[in-house]
Every structure is written in structure tokens, then in C-alpha cells.
Amino acid sequence: MKAVIIMGSESDRAFTQKIINELEKYSISYDINVASAHKQPLDVLNIVKSNNNERGVVYITIAGRSNALSGFVAANSNNPVIACPPFKDKTDMLVNIHSTLQMPSNAPVLTILDPGNCALAVKRILEL
Image (tube, rainbow, N blue to C red; front, side, top):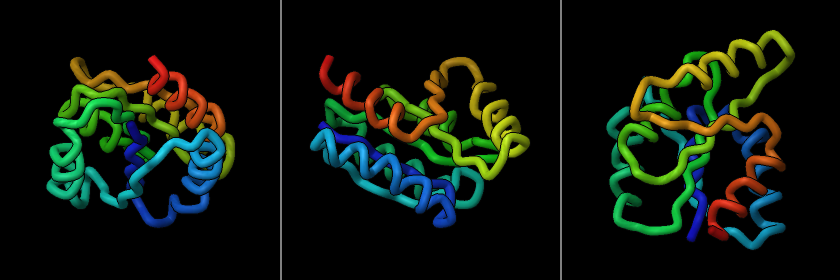
């Protein structure tokens, strides 16, 4: 059982660290990947494919702006996907939330803004 973190950009590392700190408090193992659905879609697909046969995997996608990453992962996996979009200010937050909430059909994505709540949600999902 683990969380698979996919950051859309290396610039998301500081935000991701907040989630990692909480996952470690709960003793949840995790993998960290950097791959943009827009710029490296085959890399994202390979990450998902490499975990498709594992049980107990929860994806955490960290991407802002036009968040294709979360929907792309959800559309190519049967595992839960939690989008935890980073934001710099309230305007940026609104852009990122709207992009994350508007997923196409058959691509279910949970959206959680707080990094601590994101890690707690992973913990609760993995405990089911």
C-alpha cells in the first residue's frame, strides 16, 4: 500500500514536501514522480501502467493551471486519484480549483486543497 505522487513540475516540490511530511507521520510509503500530462504524457502513462496491477495505491496529483494531470491519471487507472493543486494566492487558487474540479466523464478525481488533509485522506482510503 502506498501513495504515488505525481508532480506536474519540479517547481511543485516545496508544496509536495508538506504532503510528504504528513504521509511520513502516518508511516505511509510513497513514490515521487515529476511528469507533466501536457509535456510528458508518455511518462505519466508509464507511471500509471507500472502501478496498475498493484492493490492499495492512491495517486496524489499536484498540478495547477490547466490540470490535465489529474484527469489523465484517473482516466488510465482504476485507483483513487486525489488532486491537491498548489497555489500562490487566492486568484491562483481559484484558477487551480476550477481546472481541477472540471474533469471529463469516467475520470473521477477527488480535490483536496490542504496538504495535511490530502495525506489524511490517503490514510483513510488505504485503511478501507
